Image (cartoon, rainbow, N blue to C red):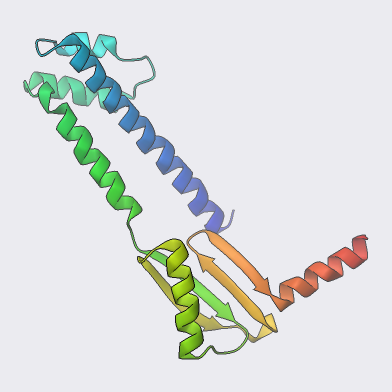
Length: 162
């Protein structure tokens, strides 16, 4: 498994786990609201769906024990804020070309990439003469290989197969 594939798998796992936790917290808050302010931890926990993560159940029990179950909506908002902040992280990219790009070319490429991927993008430019021509653009786990080397290799494969 390549580093890029590992990053894709890790991101998918992160998304599944955080969405599951957030859904569990929302389910707990819905149960708390439906049962009213006098609901006990046992009542709220019993009203939760079977698939709610043990961590969410433990948090609800802890809040109830501290008599702070009414703070669950604030916990949810804070958790959503943490998740939103994670999506605003700096995104790293690399543009590899066959020849050195001048400042105007780099600026135009960077502007196009920032329009597509946002302002939190940091791009490194490099040169690989074996590309013959064209560009390879890597942004996070995405790769756009528009190099002449790759196009010639594809043409060669098509001629052999076809």
